[in-house]
Length: 94
Image (cartoon, rainbow, N blue to C red; front, side, top):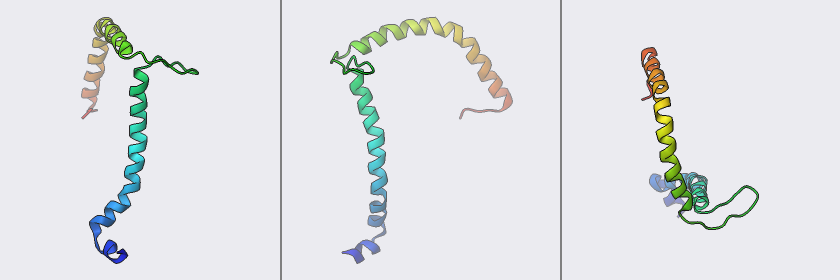
């Protein structure tokens, strides 16, 4: 069995990559799952939260559209100026 494992490069590569894949899954999916879970609760720092469902998202939908309407006219000139200066200096974002 050990000799067959040493001769099969694909299986050996998979075996060496397995610990890294497990760590990546753990450290990427846990914060994502926790963030989604917290999005459906009213958790505050230092206390547990209650399940409130989509209330947070409904609040953000209303607040975000209001914030977008207020911030876009004032931020657009700054965005254009910085983009133009970056382009002129040769700093590409791509």
